[in-house]
Length: 454
Image 1 (cartoon, one colour):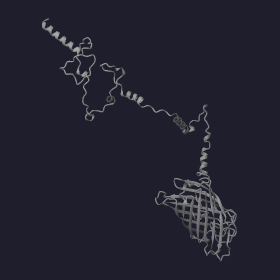
Image 2: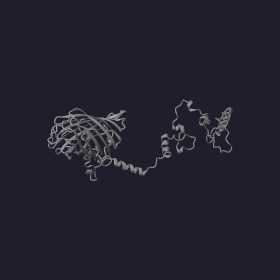
Image 3: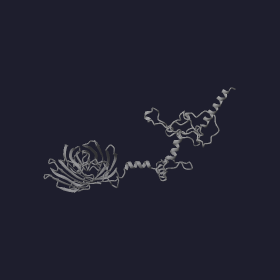
Image 4: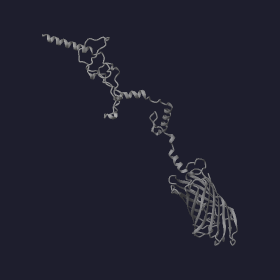
């Protein structure tokens, strides 16, 4: 081999050895940027050098790049980094410190699960609340869902025996109104009628005492009494057992009859007839503002002869009453309408029979339930003659003469009002005049009452 070839191989061997000695055991962190190609890396003299390893020198790509200026993300048009990129992709615990590539990055889902287990603990359970919740859940369950016994036979649910009948009886007999004998205050927007007080019955179930005074002028053209007047002073009483059933004492008091000077009859006064009977409020439309009732009066002639309060034996008077509210949302007030009709018939024909129909309209000013101007109409038609007296007239709701007045009737109109001091204390008054028909004993009438209601 020529000498020039040996010299070239020696130079090549000395250069490869220097490069191998410059390669450290571990990668060195770069300081101040990548090393310049012109600056050789000189190893420390105190480090034991391993045997020379032939191989390629360390490339710049294997060394971490130097720190660079942070550029705001708003200036870089790149997608937002995911969790692994934002926090650094965690590696497995056994990745080691080898410069070789470590194990695969841990998925972000595993990291999230670990954080939720460690950083956000479940709240401690409350055994008391759990116990109460279980009891509430058991209470709300329908017992009919589990009627099987341990033997497989169906269980008889005696707790619901007759429940349907209880609801039906409750609809018929009603419920107590918050206390014994308390009035039904569901319809406090209504008022009781003023005129024709013994026949025109309020459809609500009420507990009250109602003093009444009536003064009625007799026409001077009346052939039997030739003027004068007839008066009544007494009290009505009502007792509500439930919001549907009540007992009504329609008439209890005294009657005074004072004929004109030319009349063949003398003045007289006596205890008035006793009228009373049950009432059933069979309909209570709370949403529609309507109420209806039916009842019967027992008209018992318990008074004296001087005021014609002892005629015959007994009259029965079944009736129906209805009330309806209108325009309850009208800003200036609402209207209430009441209607009542019935028929009075004698059990032995000694008394006269008659049919009546009454209507009532009032205005609840500003819906305050305080002031009620009203108008009422009352019509009474005598259908049979009695056999007690030869008098050719009848006294409507004040006197039943048992006279000869078959086929005669009278329509009257009343104007007045009612004021509520409170719902438990009310004052009413009306002036009533005839409109059509034979007047008989009716020239005009004043009616005043005062209600004390529970």
